[in-house]
Length: 217
Image 1 (cartoon, rainbow, N blue to C red):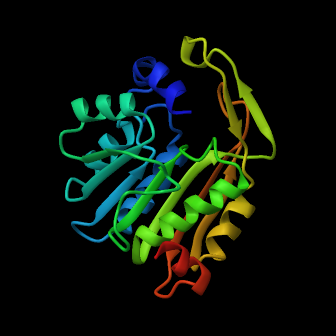
Image 2: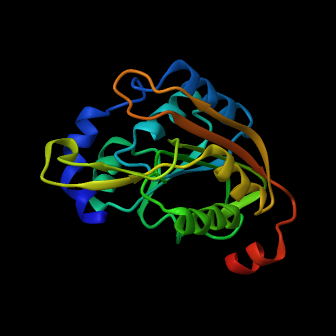
């Protein structure tokens, strides 16, 4: 996966330079997430790519302290060039290189689309670990079941498998790990989208269940 995204990084960034592809409904949900964050909050863009959502968050909430994480060094290189206001690092969402309780918000915008059910559980565990009590997490992903194959990704000789997730199951994974689910929705596909889109917004409760806390600590 790292090699694939390193290969396509420049073309990915050129095709998706900002948040103009998102629907008004999508942006409204991101705005809701941002509006719920306290002043000066530290926020992780988990799977930040070249930084397009970092720019959106900076535009909407310039007071936030933004952190970006991506598996691809090439993506992080592009993000560093374009997002000097953010702290950026290469890393895996299932092993986030941040201390426990260090962020008040996590945005994972289409960054779990290659994660199977088991790996998604590990990622939610990590989001729980790094979130403060009362911290918020917003996920966007492709909704459904099974997988879809992406051939010639971004014009390169690269193939990727994208995993579809049921919003109800994603919400249940958060609830099982001590989160209150604030919003769970699916919107129909639009334009060239091959599938509906799913979204889950959740808040970490003050106390985490024992197994999750142990896994993080």
